Length: 448
Image 1 (tube, rainbow, N blue to C red):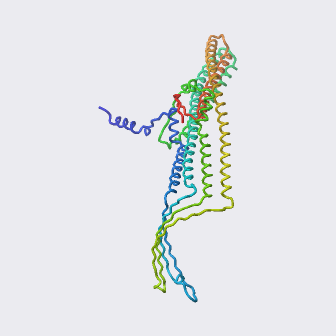
Image 2: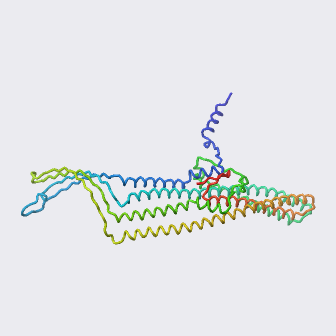
Image 3: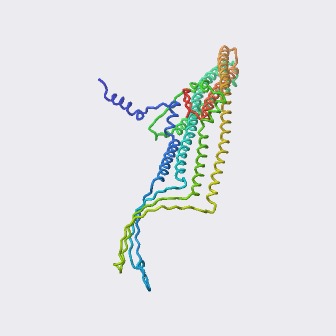
């Protein structure tokens, strides 16, 4: 007979996996996707784009007529009068109500330029979002590779501790047999304790990189989150040799074409030009059409025969032209013209910095690849040397000092390969960021 409790547990696991301690696995690609969706930085930039949308709608509303309503209540009390008296100055109460419609006919193209500037501002915020995305992707990749490298070091250190423990046991056995001096035992103990300290530091570093990844991805820390995550991936699974098939010149061209920072300067310059056009609107007359309905009610306290109520409507066109403002418009225009020059200068500087970044990163990546090939040969030789020295030591042909030296060389080779592989991964991620491109872990290239 099927246990009902077991059935309910299975249903709960399917419907509520995190409630029962299930862990969601995050690969590098999934970590990047999750971070782009949940990072507070990216969400904040999305809000800025929404604000730009509201500004566009607000500027579009300037083209439509405005309707206003007003009401005024006035009480006039006469203090004294002599001679002929104007009935407008007798004790009275006035009620005035109006409804007006105003349509701007010409504003020197100010409204048009403000509307176009608002659209440019939205594109500017979108370009800023792309900058933030590239930076976030690079930081997530860097933290992810650092985490994998640290885990790899943890495994390597654990294996080294096992080797050192075995070597220590043999050193003690040889000392007890009076084959080797006690100094060999002390050296083995020292190397073993040093490796244990490295192990503890590595375990702490793993926790730090996991916390960093969660922060970058917008995941809560500690027990306040309902999502238990685990980052998966093998450090040596990411092949860096077939991921970049471009030469330096192609990289430079692609960087200048794709980098959103270049678009930022173009958009900034476009907005400054619109600011110049908005200022120029002050040199033109402002023409508007106005139509309204009015209701005026006068009630005299002591002279009711003068009471009257007027209802009327009016329509007309008005024009206003500022002929002199002390030069403020001219200087404001000059300020925006200087702003355009400043933006162009900064754009040239950023282009130089981008070229430098791409050149240095590309060259460093090529060097790191060569170093990785070399260190892999070094590691293979170190592993064979350690195996031979261990065999010689067991056969009492070699000395324990030679075994310790081979162990130290093997440790350095393992560390060198781990660092070289990390350098390749980080430099590749940095080059992808420098090119303004997003490359998936599978090696597929996606242009922004």
